[in-house]
Length: 387
Image (tube, rainbow, N blue to C red; front, side, top):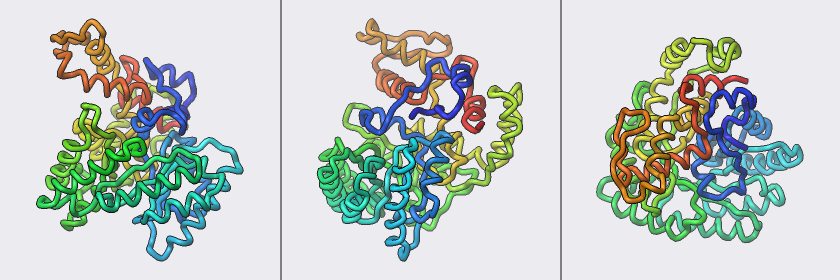
């Protein structure tokens, strides 16, 4: 699989200076953590879940979470588990290419049990999402994951969700973060990424952001995100990939744009029309939040609606200007430091302070590609939405 792999090769060639690289569920963890992109959540109760997975893979989704936790009623857990086992068997029988698949469990015991019940179809599973992750709960989850991995012979990753009240409340936040850090560091090889449960953060104070506001506009939430990145997202080799929070609004209907998108992958000058339409359909807040995610050190995003996938991926592509700056900063002859004017002659690149940024930029370029000099977000979004 690869990002933008669902569009025609000729269109992809016209969009990218450097095309996204292919990867698989067996690729190195470093690549997979950067490649998660828009991770689409789906309730595990859906009766045609296998069809949904295949359909979304064909639309460019590369990671999905099949949820047994908050997205379903407490009374549905047993039925949802049984459905998952059936749907994995269906996917296996079809032999279709699937995204990276994760199961969001409620309790550690579910991990070993589900892996046992999946049998040989566990080969389609990339890991588990671990909710309300704290030091105490996290150790139990990660020990269960380790045992399931040994029993199945399959590499399985964990994606802890940071959403507990202890992390939100000021008086307990420092110790909670330190405990989480101790736990994920102990199991570093198993932790693919850390996810933020911003909806739970807001719930603790009876808050809900409006469609024209980002998570960062809710100051109590923005403060938690900053502290999580401070402790767990450092660029000195000790940090983890931290993904962006969920966007709750999804009034955008992709079919509204299909007629104009089919005319040309480059919109034939209709870029401003599409940009206006996006703003009018409540995606302006999402676009701003994605930009703020990246500015604050987050990569990828939790998504609950397919219409969010293309914007997340389009804004994850590295621009030609970013790529040029990163390459200049990381040239071997720049190892001693210094300051140089960018190739675009609009900024100064400081070799030592900007090195970590440049390394992360090239990592993103590897999996999302580098846009051609004259290609921007709207063209990439149009290509992502087009069939």
